[in-house]
Length: 340
Ligand code: SF4
Image (cartoon, rainbow, N blue to C red; front, side, top):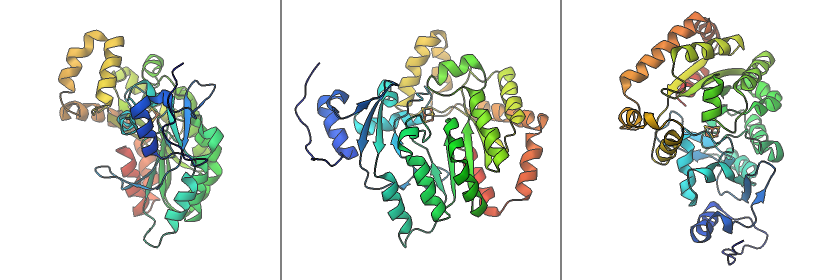
């Protein structure tokens, strides 16, 4: 077992992300000696954050909240993989096995929401991590953050693959009565093989859809994002049709979809995954993903097919009926969600 000198000495204070990056740069993740290993074999490093609300550019929303960094769900296509590099960790196994936990997150958020300059903008929760990954059951940072948003009647949308979101139904119902509050359950496919290959640490797709059913029955505005559709693995028409039908059968209020995109960091990881599982597809993928996005024509074809299937299984009618009863603000927030 290698040993490393003490790389930071902060007494009882928890390190910041900068401390973490400095430590890992010198000694690798093995130098994070206080990171706790849990039964899921991931390691959890408690940290302190200076800010909770994060302003983003180039996204369809302006503000995000992420109580954790890294994600044990470990989806191979995850665009958040590349963010782990900021902490000097790799976008491969370390993204899914070394999780940073912002223990002072809720207190910092509460202060930020009280600032006179904060005007109650829409907040996207869980954009660089899954805020309902299993460790949330222990820390409850997401639940407490939603409590803070509820106190301020602050509009929000949360995207997740974690059925644990059902635990917070009481808060989501209460917030939804006051302002925009939407749950976007991510279920790219119900195909078993594609799920096992692409999303190794996630709950079964049907378990996620049962969570959608439970939320909708309780009065939460909950729907499904088929994001991302992965060419060749989950894009076959039969798979798309089965997925849309199953989503409709589970009472989702809406469905959105997008084809996978690959940015640096995630791209390298995904290509390694492809080389391992489908080596013959590499040249076709290199062509399809010569740029960040698959060609527009291909994306339009897939989205067109989804629209046809939405009509066929009654989802378009369901969404239209819902829209008629909504405010301009919530309509706008809903569109924002579709592009996640
Ligand atoms: S659940 Fe979301 S954040 Fe987690 S690995 Fe999968 S895509 Fe990334």
